[in-house]
Length: 243
Ligand code: FPP
Image (cartoon, rainbow, N blue to C red; front, side, top):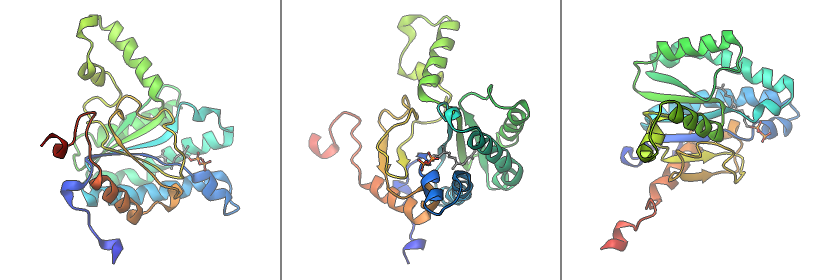
């Protein structure tokens, strides 16, 4: 019964980040509008959040809307905004009960003020939860995040010799969150797409051809099993090489 197979907790990544790609193709292949794919992707996200809690993941970062996604047709952009609003309206109470702490990475400024307020309220409501930290990357871009960090570092009058990796990490939207151990990209594209380009320096990647709406708990388990076999060397040597 592969579906009920657990992954040993010691091998589960602490921080998983996901590029939820393939919603559009999933919909088109069924003769549906692209937004139906995003809706199916959202339902799947709900299932994957639950699976992450069950597996013992502590941080989950999802790429929901990039700084480049503003270039999509108006209808799709509006639809993605509505999805964020619906998720907060319909799922927040349950997520809160499950111990999920909601965080946002990216810039809220360009969003409708009412939606901004909703996001901030959701963050405030869940701020003391600690079962799973869910970072929602919305209007997020890795380059934009680095630019924003540089601006704030300069504004704070940090001296050049004080700039180091730990300091820069503290200026990222993800401050206080460990770097992702595993980045998953669905739908087979071999691109970073401006996602966590600072934080992902030593992340392991897992790419699958499965479209996001079909990436279920069993697919997640496969990703974790693959991750468990990786030899993470961070540019050094593996333990067996050193012996
Ligand atoms: C990429 O698929 C997916 C997105 C741009 C949006 C992802 C959003 C969700 C799954 C909804 C969850 C959202 C929130 C706010 C919690 P694509 O459209 O690029 O697919 P394609 O490459 O097949 O066209």
